[in-house]
Length: 192
Image 1: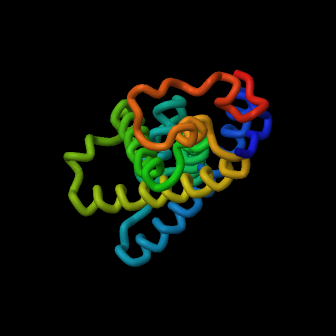
Image 2: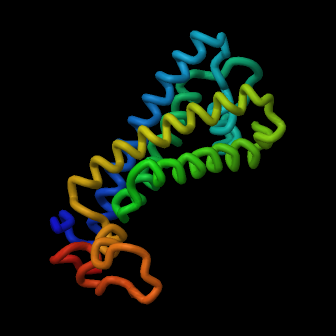
C-alpha cells in the first residue's frame, strides 16, 4: 500500500481542507451551470434564498424582491466550498465512491434546510410543490456527486484512507476483527 503523504491524522486533515474547498467549489460551479441550463428550459427564475439566508445569519440589511448578486453568490458558492471540506474528510478517511456521494447529498440537503428553516427564510420541503422539490433534489445531487468525484480523485492520490486500509487487512465482514494498529492506520510511517 502506498503511504499517505504526511502519514498522520494532521496531514489528512490539512489535505482535506484544501482539497475539500477545491472539490466543493467545483461542485458549486457544476451545480450552477446545471441550474442555468434548467432555468433556460423551464423558465424558473433565479432563487434569492441564499442571499436572504446570509442576510439573516449575518445581520445584513434585508430588502424585498431581487437580492444583490454578490450576496447571493457569496452564500451559494461559500456554502458549496465549505461543505466540500466534509466530503473531502470522507474521502480522506476512505469513504469514497457513489455511495459516499449519495450520503453526502443528504448532508447537503440537510444543511440547506437547517439554515433556511432556522432563519425563517424557507419552509420544510414537505410543504413545497413537488416539481420545485424535484428540481432542488436534482441540483443538490449534481453538486454532491461532482464534489465527491473531485474529492475522491484528490484523496486517491495519497493512497487508501484508514477505513480502506482496515477493509484491506481482512476483506469481507467480520465481527471479530478489531481496529488496525494505530501505527498502520495512516500508512507505514503513520502516527496519530
